[in-house]
Image: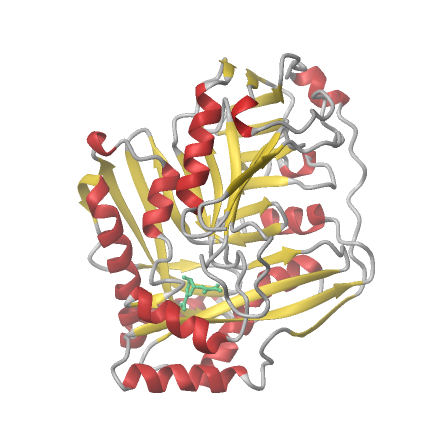
Length: 461
Ligand SMILES: C=C(O[C@@H]1C=C(C(=O)O)C=C[C@H]1O)C(=O)O
């Protein structure tokens, strides 16, 4: 499967798309995208205005503080496999664009042709659970995209073939949306490795680190949620966008969450990465004074600063070959979220024009950073494969979008869940950076804190 790729136009019309109905399957080289973007005025303000537009089937989302893009319908879907999953997706996207007919009247990041994407954490088989048929990279070109950037709002429609329904306020108003439904009662049970056994896995990692085999590894666990009613992903997206406005709320091909960590944004020659590593839990009912004390404690914790330094280094080293200049902060700041606080660094750089690299190439170079894998990378990834005991699938992989010029934004799929074919089940994920000074019980508690956003979004708490 290595390097293989397939492109499938999604056949069924998805409400509320005003775009034309499905197109017959054709070879990727035969696809011609027709794309049109216009300004719209009818979008209200607020953090959930974009996600409130979404239909219940396969919603596509990349939203933060009310800005971003949402999409629905699938004009085209590109699946990729194996270690070449980013390069193949990039090549397929470029090939599509080379034949696309585009009229973009807005010309901002996120206007014109856009593909949402999600990629697996690992590029190799991960044991029995590995499904040879499951793509390790997916790009979805929606039929309809609605976006906001500050005061500007727009709508894009895309079709494969000669007919295109016009975007605009009237098309948006005509879209039919069914009301969001609640998942009802939600029960949570241990996933692949139970909460009783997981600290033993962490202890094993600490032993390996103390023996000198590696410096840091990130270990994760999953929890399986069962919902009383079929899950409407918009229920999660609305709550996440409202409750975690400083995170990027995402939904792509069944991978849903609100991540605080940006693997890379590339925009007009500037690259940015928000690196997180080093975490402290926020207790319920904490006062402002308590949280300031906690923040100060985190900013002084040598264990957390060490974990953070590994993550910043891995990002700076990966970006350097693409940049003519870079700014790597000397010290992190503390990012406050409702459930946890993180040590955070915004690494920025100016892209070397000679590199002509798009955001997918940058994401491929940066993934997996030490924030989600470890240091050194290969030793950490091997240890994850050996002892984690769970198939990460797309958890901790890049998720985001790419535009016509290759610019785009890729977050790391954290504080997330994977929705499967069965609408009553989903897998929630959380992981923790382990270094020599890590305490297994404290890491279990930290992983519980990182599960809070998805549990809360489900209404399970
Ligand atoms: C692995 C996760 O988070 C990562 C690990 C962190 C840590 O160990 O301190 C902090 C932020 C993320 O980079 C997760 O949320 O699942």
